[in-house]
Length: 279
Image (cartoon, rainbow, N blue to C red; front, side):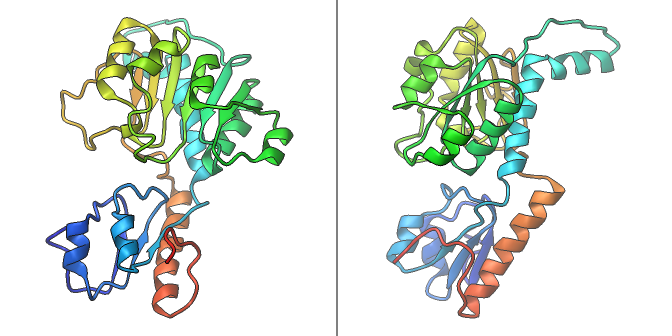
């Protein structure tokens, strides 16, 4: 990114690392950053704000897509779909016994746009839904019979399936660690379609090998792409996908269109669809 930074007026970026060094090299010519997606942890938003540099992003365009991917991971784990399909492809007729999700409790950490879509799908599958979010939507929760938890720990203690849908911050980094895994139910399934750094990799790998965690489905890792010896790639009952939860033909068009429109609108002096920072 340092090699690219410099002689242009705007950044149209995905999950690229827009650090302070990149921004310093880009200024004073750089006029705005338009993010393709909603995760801002790769952008130094504080520094951008201090320089009155707008950071635009695209909320509301991929929530259904990511929710579908979340349930794909859950079904893949509970029904051993990945394992048995790979065995069949290799000529082995492996018949494993899975689990139903109907009647189980799913705990959602982060009841924003994506978390809400996961809750809707969980209800359709006959699951009980509990959730925690700092900004609680009482109307939505009541309409979909979602039980409010007062803390993340309350969600973890009472869920058969834990689904993470919160932003990465200093407060949430490493939130799923050995201590919190210990308070979860034996055999819990953890789903992570948010950010890999929410989970302490070594602690999750150890819990999967011990059987304390019954399954881990993730579309994100703490290092992407991961090294061949990443601890979670060969952990038992684990399904890892390559950060493709929002990559459908429908969602990609929506994200690209909004990110580009944001950029064009700002440079024309018009109001963009969404701006992450205020000054």
